[in-house]
Amino acid sequence: MDIVFCGDTFASARAMLRERLVSSSADRLTVWPRPDAPLPVPRADVIVPLMFQITASVMDATQCRLIQQWGSGLEGVDLAAARARGIWVANVPASGSNADSVAEHCLLLTLALLRRLPEAVANVRSGVLGTPVGVMLGGRTVCLYGLGATALSLARRLKPFDVRLVGITRDPDASKVAAYALDRCYASDQRDECLAETDVLVVCSRLCAETRGMIGAAALAALRPGAILVNAARGALVDYSALYDALSSRRLAGAALDVFWQEPIAPDDPLLLLPNLMATPHVAGVTDRSYADIADVFVANIERLRRGEPPANRAV
Image (cartoon, rainbow, N blue to C red):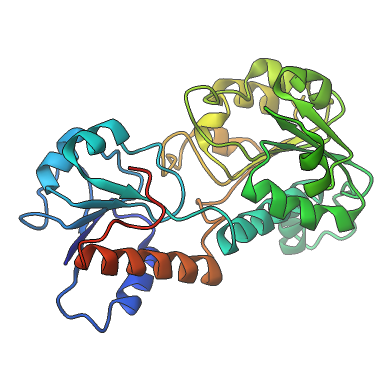
């Protein structure tokens, strides 16, 4: 079985999968670093999108039978082209240990922003004690924008911090308020009303045509002055220019990003030079338990493919 990783990022995914496939000497894992590079094998049975757009031309070049995402997001795959070619497309559900891992990372970023962790670390190295003055999470209003698996996991972790928890969703029914233990749930068209009382905005939405750039200048202006933003969902959910302006003007006290508009983000990107911007390299879901669970689902689908069976968690 030839398995081709489309992109040379996320090396831990390849290492984890190799461990799981060690019993099958017939399986070969290779890396196709970019679309303009030569394909490393004559054809691929399985291709894995890793920051690599899976277009019709990629499908034709690889002649693959299965596109298996290492995670949940399929926005980089041309599903219509796959359907037309009879290629199966599958992902791994965002629930379980992956959602828990992302939720933990969002909490880490939130606390690090509020307590000004980079500045505190710098002060240790400079021999400075007793500064900076941090902001407590307790008593703040946290908004979960998008109520899916990650938001549910995060809600359970936030409540013990004694926060006021609100959510924004397309369908703010009573069951969601109960399931997420929200103090209040707002419909999408009530967004600005919700943001006006928000101290911490955590972006939890899926990326699609309707949500692309949804956190723009208007949304950021609607936030309480001094609010912070955390995004470990998808970079394109936030408008780059609007975020830069809000951070540079200090209307937004800080932002923490684990995802970006182009990945990896250029090391000299002006946004990274702002002192109130924290960034991590798309690692929110990269944990031992999350990757182990993803690898197990992945290998199970490889075995289904071997038997000529359709994969679990099919999108196409």
